[in-house]
Image (cartoon, rainbow, N blue to C red; front, top):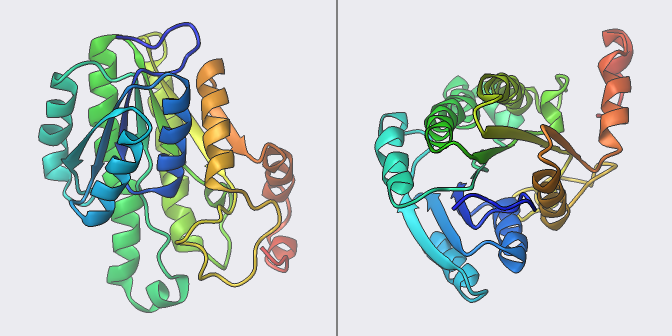
Length: 253
């Protein structure tokens, strides 16, 4: 059943079922309208715990084994989910931060970051987009990052993977225009989660999973194509994007 005029979904498929941002979004949407949730991720106690938490909120929740790196399986796994009934929103939320210093010394580790954040997302995104287009409605919400807007010395491996993902998602949105399906790119700044807690300090304009979830809900209501979290990042990033490299590389970013 398609989302109604509110733009909010009755059914949600999360790719990256243990993501803190994704789960905050699922909780928020369940509190509004969502009643069916699929959590796709690697089988683990954490995935089952996440499912139980959402069931406690009143949603029907199912888990499905999904590995971002196993791109050969994406078509089979995701087609089975869509065959169970229409999906109103697919939230592509998987990804890894990596360890910049370590990954620079170990190219295989850097490649794993790229394969997860970009190659895996291209595969899952295309399969999901095809299914949304076939059913004639639905949104693909892609968690990108402000890190993809311009290379930073501190995380250029991660940032480059997100830059590729962001460009891919924008193009996919253009390809789906007029089909009934739609792509929304979400660009958060630094998000305070358990995974980022090990990083020293907290960057300016840091945000939370709950704030990102709020922005996603508003974006779905508006059928937005791009969402920045917090919104001020749009202006800040536009300024940084045009700084000369000699100036930019001296900034503490």
